[in-house]
Length: 177
Image 1 (cartoon, rainbow, N blue to C red):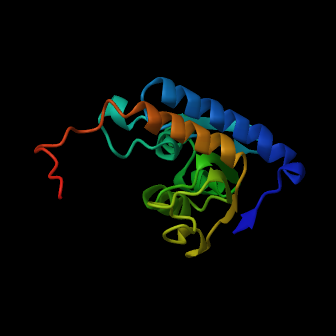
Image 2 (tube, one colour):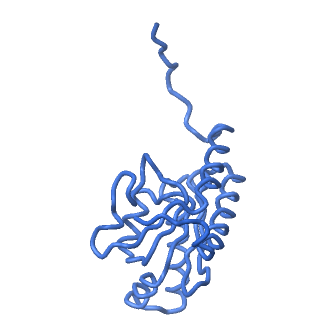
Image 3 (cartoon, rainbow, N blue to C red):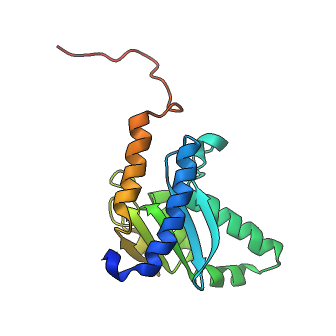
């Protein structure tokens, strides 16, 4: 896994800024603030933000939302499954936090070219923090650390304000002496 020195990653910074904007929208909607953009030929072709609470669907991570939007669009314009697979292999993903195991697995199946992310996902990361799904099969390139401090700051803001959508404990906490 490569690290991105911010001085050498001007293009990555521009696309990551767009992903950060999506994460901010997620935060405004009381979602875990993760956002992403898919890029093909240096153009953003899809974006996503976490929508798990809003949709009451735990699979609606930013990456999955953006993937579904792309699939729907490409199918509507009549692309075949083979053509769609070819398009994904020319795409890069910029996402504020390391894709979780579910999302990294999906990206691997889709044969995405590269993933650029901000901060690590120490609990659920699928690109090296927990599992290294990016190195399975054909694999995809991963570059970490792009605007990591901004991504971490958004997550800290979310957790400091408290998650009003988190389930309440069913029983009182037992404090030991």
